[in-house]
Length: 577
Image (cartoon, rainbow, N blue to C red; front, side, top):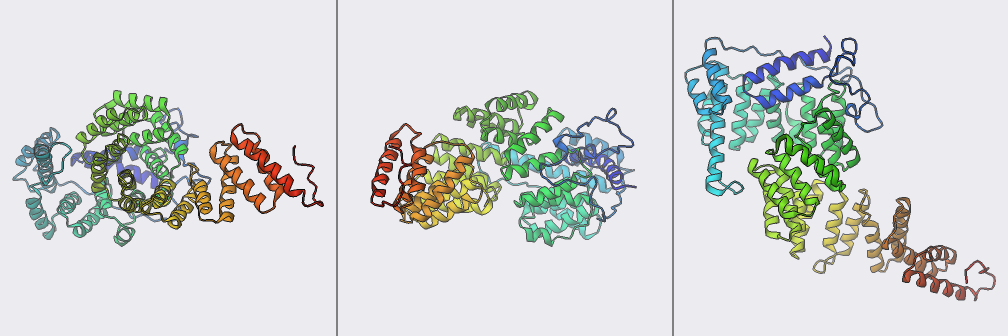
């Protein structure tokens, strides 16, 4: 049996089992990958398959290297036997409990299974108790602090669940699903090391439960931890590694893994969305936009991940496209956090910041841990000059994910607005540590060093250099480097950076005050070093302008003619009158 057929058969069985265990999000993920598997051309023709994306950008990333048609040859994957269900006697009780569970009556479901001893029943009973505790915790948070407030509410079922599940593990009566739940309970109680061990056991014995992989991923906070865990070489491990690389900001490694997986799962919308996320982190906005447009063509009612697409449209100031996307998700499912964030971005781009905040707060009422909404709401408060509210929003974001560089950057901006550069510098340093390839962060830190309180110009120069090496799309770094070197009396270095800035502006066909500034400085510098021909070139270009720079250029040309008159051997007839 080929690897493709093996993946397909395993996923079909896993979907049925995951649905039977009420792990619906994991079942949905598995079903999406099942449909995403490339069809055998000998069995399926374009006329009888739903996915006719042959030459579409959905099948590959926008890189020069091609992807293989199957998972890399020579890689040996372990064969994990699909577990058999054990429920015969308990089946009627289980069906009733599952019906209660699906109606979100978790305690009734647990009560029905109180005397059942089968592994399937034990899992559902414990899982129902866990979700009942989570539901009560959410209610207490709203009652005590409001929907967006902080609270010390905890899941009161964790202690009893840990006691029962630890006994089951000691007795060796756990199946992979109960191991997953035990790992979840341990993680919530803060026993991260043991939780990792238990979750590794779970995914090694049943690798198709994506929920278990995600919980394990949340515990792999460094590359050293990731390398230390002992995982079977199942093809699901590649999905896990790619996702974890992305969380660890190893975006190129993540892209390589996802590209590799596309060999078998070439039509997976999940893979394309993840590739777009990695490219977004690398600020490859043009490619990200193409991928999301293709995703929406193939899955027009998709809401998941579309808030990232709205961020791209916002950054590119695509009013009409963002308006269309906002209307689309509003009519599809307006009470999703992603939908609220997209609409918030739309109002922000229109400059209606108060209305934008309303929608970000609505997103947080739907999911108080929705990271993007906290960060974007912080940005809106910065625009509204409500610094305390912005700081609170950013702090809530870093509480949820300390690796979110945007929130650290926002905190730096907020403290800079409050004229507290030492605090701002601390947060800017955090942001560049997490995202060292973003020129905007280096520029923000450099500007902080330039403030009167710090006035650390040498450090500012180092930051601008890093920004210039990180593809400074806003074209700030080179001009600032030239200005700082000139202020420090280093005219040769200043001339070098002005010339580089001038070359870049010419290549991008940009005009503006920076070009005038560069031309005047270079003309003055060349004249001071008796490089009259170069100075004339720069002055001649300044004659095309209509402002005071034109008179400055004329004056410099006359001055050079007079200076050259003292050198009779030099031909000066080429200077204009």
